[in-house]
Image (cartoon, rainbow over all chains, first blue to last red; front, side, top):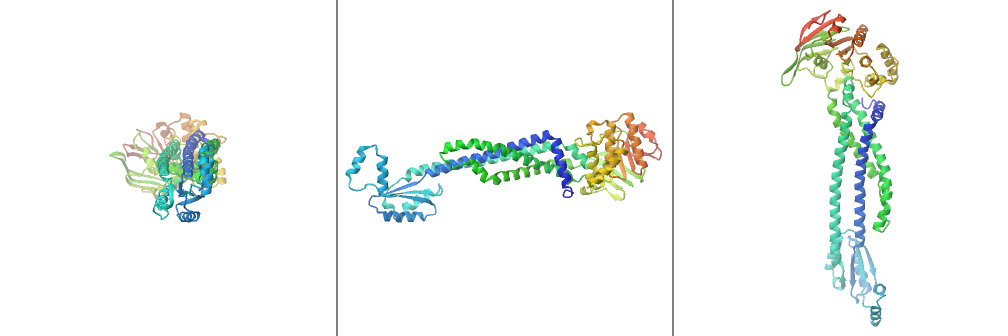
Length: 305
Length: 226
């Protein structure tokens, strides 16, 4: 019967939707708020991820070699370290570049400049700036360097300072992720309960109608059908409305993100555009599944006539 | 047509609503089931339309044993029995036409047939021209006519009317009773459940009287004597 009368079920669902327009509007409003809550979490996740990435970009390990270490040796070390899977990139700064950078940094200090001129040789060694793929990888890279045969060629390693920085960043990142998971779980639970209850109330208002349908010989699927289709209407309309609300909000938010992170690398609108179907498609499917399950459970008790 | 064999209904823990009811209703018969309130009349109707199973006994409708009817078979049974209630049980958000058409739609009748049959039934119950009104825009008598039209629209062999005049004034009551008699003349078996003395006495058809869940009288041309 359910498959045989799709047109009728669709018509009944549409009629019920319009003839109970206030109830439909209330249900849709609740679902829109649920969509907004869930997407607010997506925004929060994006912002914290961006913050972690910004911090990650700022973290590196600097190895300053002794002045007598020659360029081929440094390049050998660079090749050795580049082979490590944990390493993302290595910047080589030659002795000459190091001296130039030093001069520029202290150009205001004539005494330092004069002292440098007095020296016959370049007192600075070459250096390598190493970036890891993940924050976790820094400690492993440091261990590898410490245990390598090249360790005695290194004059200064700044990773001790960085280690604290890395560990703090890691802690913050893990903490934020834990909060996000907890908040997501909480929001999803609240959303589930609200949507489920709203559908229950909607079905409750139709209880007499369901009884009458049963008495004139309607099958259970013929009765359930319009409610399920109506639940799909609610989901789709609420999703469209939520999109219409969320995008202007993202437009409003984007300039602040640029200002905060001092980069345009993190574009939240692009993020939503690129993941449109993963975000809204998945949310829509979950909401529809939720409303359908809610409808079937809520209607069950009134079908026993 | 309808056979009740030793039907009993006991509600837990031990409330006896019906006790050993034996009734045989023939095709095209008009039977009034009478009795005081709480005597088991409505329970009998509920068992007949498979709203509730009997605790004991056997019930046969049109040769079909429905005592332990499966849930999936109930819609099929209900399409063969038209039922009218005291509170009309119309769908408030559907028009008169839609309320009547609904009984056909659940059976899978096509739209062309529905558009042909519904006006015919509306004519029988005297509601031509009111098909676009909603139940709330009709009088009690008119609402009951819509309920009767809905019960009749799929041409059932049996029409069960459970206190159909309970909410109506005397004029509307008379009209509804006349309508039920007319439907019976067309060949439909009518089971009228009522405790309205005047209605029963005016019909002059078979009367089955219930008291405390048992049949105390079954007269071919009976009167209300309680």
